[in-house]
Amino acid sequence: MKLLSLNYAKHIALLATVLLMHTAQAATATAVFAGGCFWCTESDFEKLPGVISAESGYTAGKVPNPTYEAVSAGKTGHTEAVRVIYDPAKVTYSQLVEYFWKTIDPTEKDKQFCDSGSQYRSGIYWGNDAERDIATASRDALLKTGRFKTIHTELAPASTFYPAEAYHQDYYKKNPVRYAYYRNGCGRDAQLKRIWK
Image (cartoon, rainbow, N blue to C red):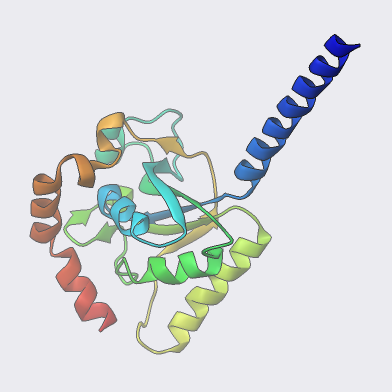
């Protein structure tokens, strides 16, 4: 009888652990954005409270398992993007979208700052109808302000997201001097100040 009680207690403890893990996983959500260089987009999103992490990668292309070399040569149709993992109790999808606009120049087509080509196009890749409606309404509201005549940022359903190679992940943390040199040399922050003043 004692052995049975001990096994039952272990079983309950195991179930409780699994339940807690499932609850923790369910408490997060993902969103995919493209804002030119994924090092910069990853860095920008990881500064936002409620964002757990951002992962650099490739999306919206036509070739399976793309490599950096193929994407950067413009051969796959992908754009550099980030997959944002966030806590919806701390930051909403709508807030992510509003934040995203301030990190890009939506007037540039197939280009962001010093990087040119469709692999650097900006985009919001929604995962469901609610996200699509939020992204579309946000873009339309931005157009109605009269600040921009045209917005070239792509709004499209999410497709397969391929994580970039390991050396691209957290590049801004692992290579702070090179990252700062690239970001400053690209004029990203100066251009963002002009656009969003």
